[in-house]
Amino acid sequence: MALERHHNGWIILLTFIAGLLLTIIPIPIWAMSWRPEWIIMILTYWCLALPQRVGVVTGWSLGILQDVLSDTLLGQHALTLSLIAYVSVISHTRVRTFPLWQQSVGMGLLVVGNQILHVWIHGMLGHPPTSWTFLYPALTSVVLWPWIFIILRDLRRTYHVC
Image (cartoon, rainbow, N blue to C red):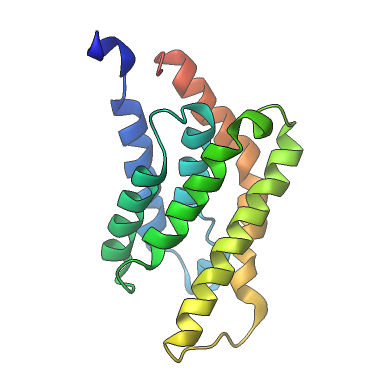
């Protein structure tokens, strides 16, 4: 019975691993400030699709992993991803009814909130931002959200993840 409830959970794990890899993969210097927030988009999708399986604890765990992989202050990503997971889970019934373009706007707001929290943490550590380029990931995440949503939804439906 327990196996029925957690059918094909390895797909969820695989998408999180892919997101972590996309987050740490080396890219050219000019593209660094435009890197989309892969983990936020994948976490948000699974929180919206399966809020009973993916939530705040998953966000915190992914955040700790991202902190270790990106060599940042331990807990920085854990805090922001936990907050994003919380907001996604409590609003999943409303957000799922929105068209994709409205969900993209919401994704942009989540990423902007994430980036502002990161800038605030870096500012407290004595590294204030020098420009507004910290908002560029929000733009790329807004553009990519419909594609990420469709790909993950098709994976979920194909493998009957529930």
